Length: 203
Image (cartoon, rainbow, N blue to C red; front, side, top):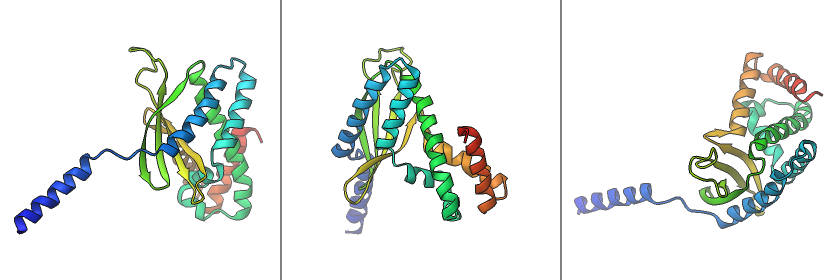
């Protein structure tokens, strides 16, 4: 009996390991809607108009407050309300400029949802690829991923985007934590980060 039970447990564990991650249709539909708007922006050749449209898209679909706190890492708990009141809008401007710069790479391209990974009941990774990319094309094997967070009320928002193994918010967190740590940490380090962001966004 013990041998049979052990074999059953091993079999169940192996099945759990090889079982494909569940997809989430609601998260995929959400990102499909975002990409429908983004694809129209990619066709715009006017840089100023394109940047303005990307900013509108980011404001509409990215949960900036959540991402801003994530980017601070453990230092988010040390930031005062006064610091957060200055930092959050600065982060929005900085992160928006990063999205604008990153999405410039897809000028004239169209992204389409391919699949998704259900990380938890409210955390999803939705993958997309360039439509019609031919073998050998620079976009042929490129996967652009979108991390979606679903609030308890069902509302969804993007909290990160990644390509080729690089995630924007994770990269920002690494950079920000380094600035804070290198300037003494705590409130002093956060003030240094705020000053650095002001320099980067020009305000």
